[in-house]
Image (cartoon, rainbow over all chains, first blue to last red; front, top):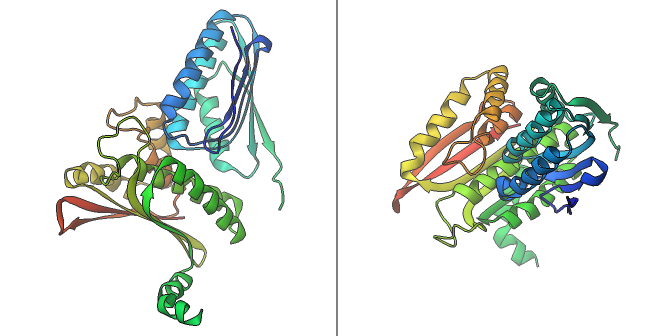
Length: 131
Length: 187
């Protein structure tokens, strides 16, 4: 299937899903006007890819610096799809990039780890860029 | 020049005395919120607010502003359900010593007052741990049908605040069906 690329905007993240390389990236800030409308088609394509690639080793890089409450809910669905794939024979290696000072994003990462045991989760705190 | 300034100086004096970092009253659309978000980020950075506090303030700002876009009862384009909402309200960020105050005001339908009160009142008596627990439960629950967001917005604000959220409802004498909803978060 075709790769999925959506350029970042001020309020929505870059989505770079290179299905042919089993490499998925989400990067930026996420507070679109309608998070469900933004994420639903992404989740649909992701699920289709995951169903077609059982047994793959999938790398997921998440570099989100901010997500609002409704995006948080949709991201949970993204990770749920990945966890199901990891339970069904694929490996999902997730790199959770975050500013080392950002407690909120660190705590959300902890939530993901608590719920989605099949995902191989790596916390990647990034040293704060001094001004 | 000086004459021009004299006329309005009371407003600017007050804004300065109250350490207003940001204030907007008027219409809110998604694009306006995005643009204001840039202003708020910059103002907080210039004011020397620490990174973690900046993130919490920005998060509360987005939740409050998107609430106005989605839920204020004063819509510029009534009956427009196809997205692109533009609704009226006000948001203000001030500094008070070490803490920051974020306030918003927007009109709501009087019939929605009880529902909103029932969502907010329980949060006031919850500890930080209880708020985090409720956040976790809501994160995993199905989204309420009337909610355009995730029902997580107030919990997100309560989690980021350093004191219980304060709120009030002021019925409008000139419009009996409308109540002004005020919400204040201390961060």
